[in-house]
Image 1 (tube, one colour):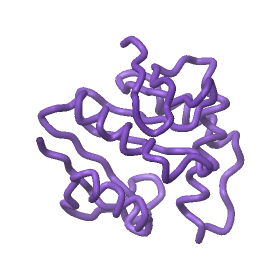
Image 2 (cartoon, rainbow, N blue to C red):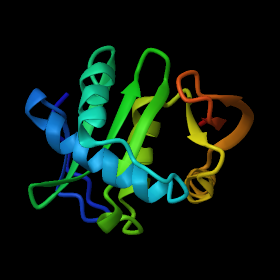
Image 3 (cartoon, rainbow, N blue to C red):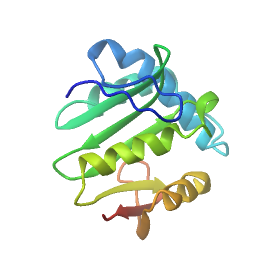
Length: 157
């Protein structure tokens, strides 16, 4: 997939991730996750997030990095076969500028027949964001590794 240049929300590029991105994605993920989960007393060290990047961001998933002036400010991990968005995070300093909406619109373009995602049930800001983007909440379950309650959301064209 070639790089694209969205003309919204201050992104200068949306490009496929490379192996060289692992450390910066782990750090960005940790910051954004901590911001989205302020009630969690202790956030895992960056080594935990690096291990997850190596384990979860490769094939069959497509990982895209959103940049602003050469700095990674967002990423998403999309399983194209399952049409399931596993991760979408925007750096806390870049949130509220429309970058997440650009990424969701890109997922809609890549999966025009519809797609799904899970979001933590306690992450009310993300749930409102996805609702504004046209996703519908379809049910609740528990994350298989953490046991945290999550909401299944779906987008249909």
